Structures are given as C-alpha cells and as structure tokens.
Figure (cartoon, rainbow, N blue to C red):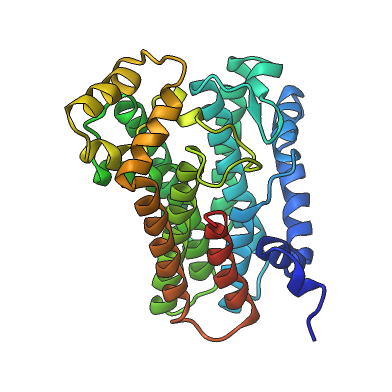
Length: 333
C-alpha cells in the first residue's frame, strides 16, 4: 500500500521529511537577511528567496547531516549558508547576463538596478561566511569557502568560453562544476563533516553531490535545445541566443564538416544570428546524434550519483536522495 508521501516528487518528499529542519532554516534566513540600516537589502533578498525556489541545496545539507546521524543544530546554519551563497550568485548572474526574468518573476536588477543586485549579493556572501564561522568547524569553513571560490572561477571561465567554438568538453565540465556542482557537493560534504561521519561516507556524499550537480546542469543544457519540448520553465534557445558553448554544441562542432563549422562560427563565434538559425542548429545536432549523446552523458552522471550513495548505510534519506538523482534525469524522457 503506497502512502501520499510516496506519490510526491522526490524533492517534495524530502522537503516533507525535513519539514521541521526547513522551518528552522527559513526562520534563520529571514533573520539573517535583515538589515537595520539598509532596508533595500531584505527587499531585494526576499524578492528572490521567497519566489518559490525548491531549496534543493539547503535540503542536501540537511539530508546529509540527517543521514550521518547529526544531533546538533548547526546544520541549520550550513543550510542557510548555502542558500545565501546560491542567492548571491543568482543576483550577480542576472546582472552579468542582463536577465529580465528569474523563477517566473522580474529579476531584481530589473526591478531595482544593477548596483543594488551586486551589493546585496555581496551582503549575502558576507552573511554566509558569518553563518559558517558560527559552526565552529575549520574544515566546514574550508569546504564552503573553496566552493564559493570555485563558483566565482566557473563564472569567469564561462565568460571566456562563451562565444568560443574551440571550447573543449574538459573546459565545459569545469564550468558546470563551478556554476552548479560545486555548491551541491559542498552541501553534501559539509553536512557529513559536521556530523563527524567516517571519511568513506564523507567522500561518498561529496561524490554524490558532484555527480548530481553535473547531471542537473547537463540536463538543463540539453533542454535548452528543445530536448523535452515545452513546459520546462525556460525559453528554448536561450543558451543559443546568448552564444553559450554547452555540451550539445561542443559535440556538434566536433563532428562538423566545413559548412557546419562555418555556421557555428557565424552564430556562436561572431553572433550573426538570423531567423531560422536555431532550427538549423537543432537539425545539425539531430543529424550527428549529439542530443542523444548528451542525454546519455546526463544519465551516466546520475548513475554515478546513485552508485556513490550505495556505499552508505540503508536509510529513508538515502533512498530519497537516490530518487532525487532519478528525478533530475526524468526530464530527459
């Protein structure tokens, strides 16, 4: 007999299971995003944090610490930390990308201005470091501060690889590890370290978070070229129009003949995009099977995430994390 909980999406089941902890995290977030002297800070922060995000990264901290039998309360601090780091990067990203919409709402830089978005993002980074210091673990501080540096490095690397059709798969992987996987793996690793878990378990949870993040981003990049049709929460072709060199593009370029290479140089390298170019790009990818190979790559990373979890003791949280790895790639079908 199945329960109502089992019929929910994995991230919803996890949220329900961690409901009490998430309530504490949300209260801590609201308290720490406040500012006595600069009311614009909570205004901008609340606009993004309360816009209906799934809180996947904070849940990964809570799940890892719960899985490793943590008994304290500082996992709430770490969960709030990763949410602040994530929110700060989104504020900065929207300025860099000149975005006008995030989570179905106007971006903060559009509603206020670029200066406010950048400075509030800086404030949230500072708050994140205050929270992680309060945990009293130098190793946790090392994990999360390294993740913050890796995220920034990945964003800068993406600037240099964008519009460059010579970008390699190795460079692409470094970018997505920075922009997505670094915070996933830091969340799961830090939760395990905080709980004093054995090193094998810490390593397994790091590997799970890393592989989950890589899989998540590859799926996102696949969807941008219409991998699953409509209803994906983003506009098909955004990456193409922004001339981002993602895995489907890299693999299509690798197999391109001279005419196709000239096409990629025009639309990505020089940005001279014409009506019908997105459809031509999709046709080239279909012809060379790069959408299918990208899909398989995402599935392989999801399998790596699940394999890492198999090293951990049986637990309902472990099962939900495994289901989450399946759910990430469910968008491929």
